[in-house]
Length: 187
Image (cartoon, rainbow, N blue to C red):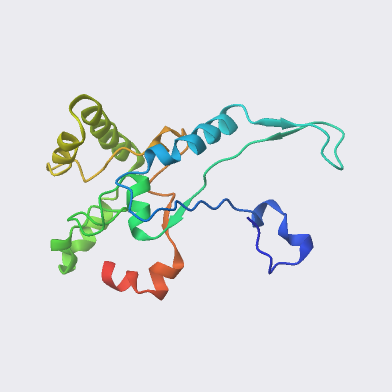
């Protein structure tokens, strides 16, 4: 997608093009991994081997095209569901640190900000969830989430992307974050 408010010469520059995905439906999906599977398959191929395009205007040699999913930008509910975090109404609501609702009113919670979530830990907990999901089913996996030390992490198909960092690459969009007041409720 490009922004039509930009001058024509700017619209198709790499930095002004972005991919938009809307998942329609009257009912909210319980999980989105199956919906995302085709695009993740394509992104993995673009990362590993890329796509060679011949006959590009202004180029004599073929052009190797690679693509990545740089950021997941959505509302709070969608980012939690897609990136593998528990919902924002749960105890560990922050996707960056280990702050809990109980500690939110405590001025000493600044210490929790030093204990930031890491990609490695997130992937470890997500893999534990996925193993339980495949061996024992959804109910057992959801029970596992409530145990201390799992930090409310579910498996997400985005974790199959070798470069994906769910902590750094998940962003709440500005409309929900600022204009609708999500910031004031979160901190």
